[in-house]
Image (cartoon, rainbow, N blue to C red; front, side, top):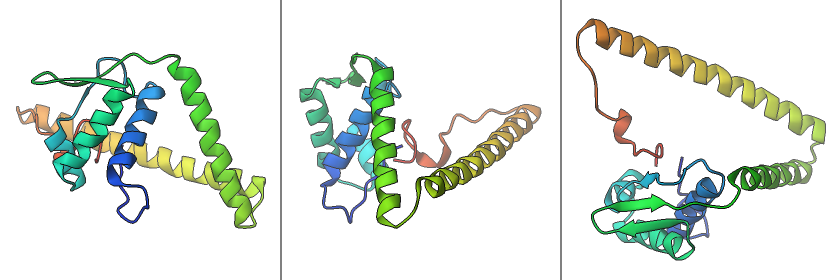
Length: 159
């Protein structure tokens, strides 16, 4: 899921580039995965197409993707996505603990808060899965299928 914070001092193209690079390094976006077209991603994010084009261009220059006119932009192979994912998760964990400590919290409080949020996220995921299953069953019983993407989102989530 790509998010752009317009209040961030980091320019939007850099936010897009860094988030996509992280997803590629971790293997979330696998080799050959086609990124959304520039115009689609720009529309999903409410940005100018040139902003997304710059992010894609920088990803291509860094060896994360390959873009071909008419063929889209596809993810290239990266070394050791599992190791990269583990390193990134540890980095995010360190940043989280640093922020908790800055707020005067303890490691125990951080772990408890994370556990609480994870439990809530699991409950939401189960609820969403049940709702989707019920919709699919309902559509199947009514003899129709829906090919429309949910909420106009791109393949990478609510971009």
